Length: 168
Image (cartoon, rainbow, N blue to C red; front, side):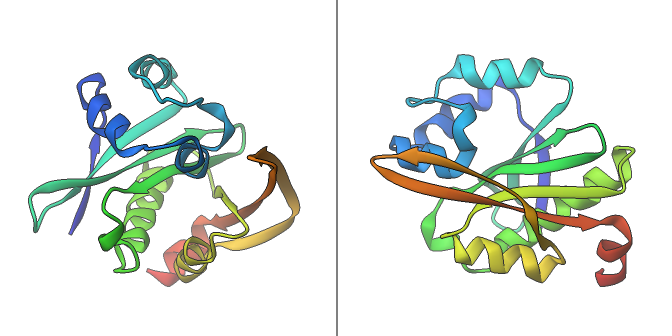
């Protein structure tokens, strides 16, 4: 069972310790953060009233297993910065549970009918996870970023509250 707990400034060192290099930071956070991730960068986000930051807590194991955020936009809310700490826990359904909890939170607490997220096109595991929850790719929205002479393409995916509720 997954529980979203409010992320606080004192949780920053644990998150920072999980980001080992600039590529993992870019994958996790997009281009908004710079490496190395610092407590100050996270504190700036904590001050942003449109950003909701969470520790992901596994109630059966009684430990924090990751991090996730919601960013309130004009007409939607954006899921992002979803990270499962231990790579051995990836591919076990945690991502789907985390995304569902974020959507439940967003649709019940925020006055929005649509949620979205951005994911790099090479991250096929994450894309499949999001599709299983009901997200669909929006082909009209994409961006790109360069790292180590590589071009990473970010695709956008959306889900509306009716679709989410029908799949629950």
